[in-house]
Image 1: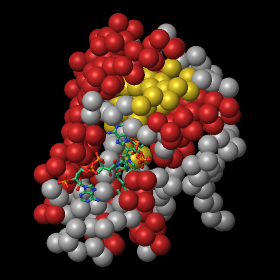
Image 2: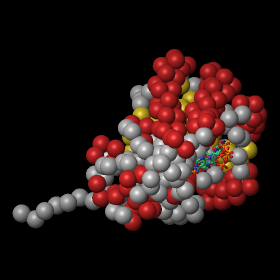
Image 3: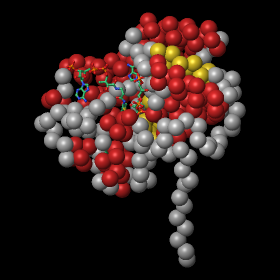
Image 4: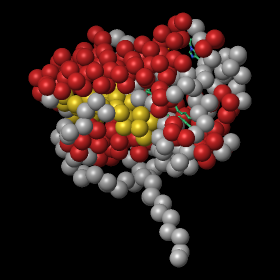
Amino acid sequence: MAEHRRREELPEDVDSDDCLASYTHIYSPDLLKDQVAFITGGGSGIGLRIAEIFMRHGCDTVIASRNLDKLKEAAVKLSAASGRRCLPLRIDVRQPDGIAAAVDETLKEFGRLDILINNAAGNFLCPASALSFNAFRTVLEIDTLGTFNTSKVVYEKWFKDHGGNVVNVSATLAYRGQALQVHAGSAKAANDAMTKHLAVEWGPSGVRVNAVAPGPIAGTEGYRKLGGSAAEAAGSFRGVPVQRAGNKTEMAHCALFLASRASSYVTGAILVADGGAWLTSPNDVSALLGIAASKRAKL
Ligand SMILES: CC/C=C\C/C=C\C/C=C\C/C=C\C/C=C\C/C=C\C=C\C(=O)SCCNC(=O)CCNC(=O)[C@H](O)C(C)(C)COP(=O)(O)OP(=O)(O)OC[C@H]1O[C@@H](n2cnc3c(N)ncnc32)[C@H](O)[C@@H]1OP(=O)(O)O
Ligand SMILES: NC(=O)C1=CN([C@@H]2O[C@H](COP(=O)(O)OP(=O)(O)OC[C@H]3O[C@@H](n4cnc5c(N)ncnc54)[C@H](OP(=O)(O)O)[C@@H]3O)[C@@H](O)[C@H]2O)C=CC1
């Protein structure tokens, strides 16, 4: 009997940050019709692809981070291609006052807010012994305090009275030990706990809180900084059950599921989206890439 080996078709635009290449809908094109999403770190990488795909499903977006020029450029492209509105706003997720001003601006512009995507993060490879106290604190402040700050402001200003959906972007590196990643792993593990606590506390207000936890996602700053291309060249992804790195569109589809009525009975969940990598594959980046743990990593 002939062997039938089914290969799933990958979503398009696998490795490009060039917005709005061809796209085939998997979900109904009206899934987020006339909703509004606030996406931190929405000007690049996974956050940008989330903005793009949400807009393809009828949503208006706010993309918010530190680099306003980058955001403005992305917003023009996103709006032109989708016919939806995209508002670029400068925030640093470590500064609650700036977030509050941005949420006020969002409500003034759109009159509603339905979805918060906590995607902003910072990371680099560094051995714990070489990591300065300020470096550890910086990553915790961006990833964990930043997620709490933005969630709390959005809840107080809108979700408490109107309901809404929060989707946090976690990382599977939080689920087991990994050299050179104590800062990011600690931050993302705390965020996973926050996801569950806020889901319980805010559920009665009509707010669902979930997370998507990516493994290595190609074509992103995180992938570049953590040695994804080198790992790929060394064949390190052969041990991943689906035998490859993920792509940004795949992460955006997970975020869309969690942010929409498609997941209406799901809250406090962490959707692991890593091709099965953390279950089976060696994940010690330092060993894979030959980086001495006693030195400061230069990647
Ligand atoms: C799971 C996989 C399993 C199996 C697969 C098999 C193999 C895997 C093999 C390889 C892995 C491949 C792919 C990756 C996989 C997963 C990735 C997982 C998670 C990714 C998470 C991400 O967060 S990605 C996001 C990346 N993007 C960014 O980082 C952009 C934003 N970043 C920044 O703005 C900066 O980098 C920042 C975080 C440092 C913040 O900037 P700023 O506020 O300006 O802070 P600074 O003043 O510059 O610095 C503050 C202190 O930090 C010190 N610092 C800065 N950079 C470094 C560094 N590179 N190393 C050490 N220390 C650093 C700096 O010196 C300051 O400290 P002082 O004491 O000097 O004050
Ligand atoms: N790529 C991967 O392989 C993986 C990524 N992830 C997660 O996916 C998410 C996106 O990462 P990725 O797309 O790779 O990387 P990017 O660097 O493209 O995205 C990070 C974004 O966060 C923004 N940002 C950083 N610091 C701040 C801050 N203080 N305030 C506001 N915005 C900030 C950046 O914009 P700006 O510089 O303008 O502020 C940038 O747009 C992150 O949460 C990351 O942890 C998880 C696992 C794997």
